[in-house]
Length: 162
Ligand code: RP5
Image 1: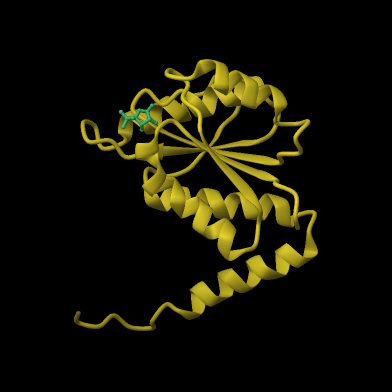
Image 2 (image 1 turned 135 degrees about the horizontal axis):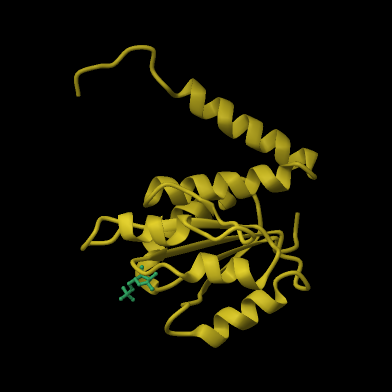
């Protein structure tokens, strides 16, 4: 796999520590991606251009993370038919419940596949993107199967005092 098939976009530099969890999964599975800051509010023209060009540039999945008034994933879903996976970034003021509700409650017709709040959601967004791509890519499917069984194998039978 050499072509960039996944776009990771986020509303701010401050989202990167969270969104890096998605990038780490894609790195681990050898999936090429790009990462961009695209803010629905601060750079709306950038959002528009990104959505407009997504299909022609060969993107197959977009992972979009934002916090607070988190309009980026939904606006991106309005602009492109490329599937959008939304990551609600945890916020200081409202712990990310604001982000979650902003991303989750899309109107009929324009879905965003919304993950959990924060780092676990970003990690799962990477895995969800991998699962989508693996449907058409047997080599990636094998890698994803191994990643999953390695995770299962790493879980202890019994808890210990730590
Ligand atoms: C949102 O506002 C971003 O996605 C970020 O989560 C939040 C805060 O942004 P900064 O003020 O840290 O740049 O647009």
